[in-house]
Amino acid sequence: MILEFNGTSWTTIAELEGLEVDGNAGSAVVMSKDGTRVAFGAPNAEGGGYVAMYAEGPDGTWSIVGDVLHASGISGSTAFGMALSLSADGRVLAVGDRYATL
Image (cartoon, rainbow, N blue to C red; front, side, top):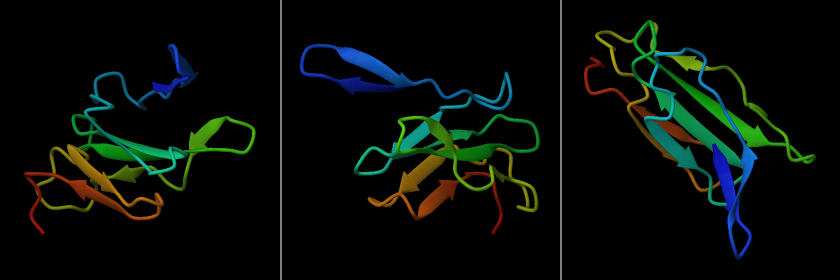
């Protein structure tokens, strides 16, 4: 859920949902400096976890940016997306998984 403070109260501007019921989507959340991009991790999702990035469009709607990132192909990954860091402009994303072997 993305909320905005209008000076008096918080208003919901977007409700983003995970791709799986039991994936723990939102365990890690990061937002760009200007608030127009947000990424969240789902480290308990099937297959070792995933990360989804969303961006706010000119009309105020939020949609997925690029592909959803999955842990497939990462040796030992069982918690992909448990930690995230996003650059200020929202163009560079770092994803953590304490169990992965690189």
